[in-house]
Length: 322
Image 1 (cartoon, rainbow, N blue to C red):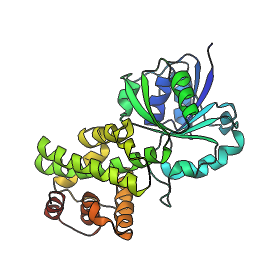
Image 2 (cartoon, one colour; image 1 turned 60 degrees about the vertical axis):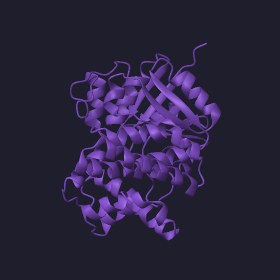
Image 3 (cartoon, one colour; image 1 turned 90 degrees about the horizontal axis):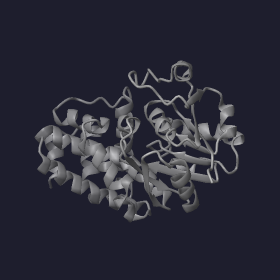
Image 4 (cartoon, rainbow, N blue to C red; image 1 turned 90 degrees about the vertical axis):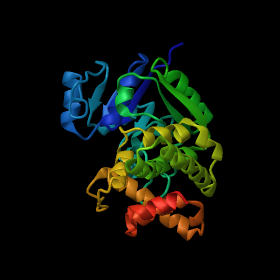
């Protein structure tokens, strides 16, 4: 028996559009993109394109778009693909519109402004986090792609077998939703750390030396946050770290590459890439010092010193190879 689902994707940017395309492959899904960008909505509805973000790609003609929040009344599943800093107020606004059975899945990567996990602050009974090694352009083009689903087992089963059927998107699972959120936050920071040595040495030996250290620190962070340390072995752990830190499509790796080549990086907030990477380094660098465990996180401390305390590139290299 077929189960028809209405999937509303909040955010019609690069990743939201890519996810809409793939979810539309399952003909039992009704896929709707919600956006505040009227020109994007009009383009999708009239031309079956999102020219602003993918100028050469035609979308599945079944995908619709809207700027009307009333669409969330009909959602069986909501995917949050909007900036992490606005998710909490956004979900509070749409809470009264949603069905009690609606599943709300956070795909955004980052923490709320007060350093809390987003999924612990959004007001729904069926909440999940889904993160993995997925570049949007490859998702859009139909390549097999994977995520870790963090949440309730019954929600995972429904999403995997009913929503993702025939999409070429694959899941592994953990009940520890906080660990999935944490991995997605940390991997951007460590991509900068690895990019720095790649920019300086352009050496696979050096890249994987630091990559291995990064994996160890990420596992220690899982322990520090009282999360399941086995999550490091999921798609959101080793998989997403590898994708983000070792592939030049990654903006965070590119930031590290530029720093490693000697470019000065301004942390004033003028770039979205710098903001997210810098926020994580600052937050984790200060937190590990406050907890008295800074010595267990030498990569984080080296990043903090070079980005916030004026340490030199040579100082950074000396620290990470110690």
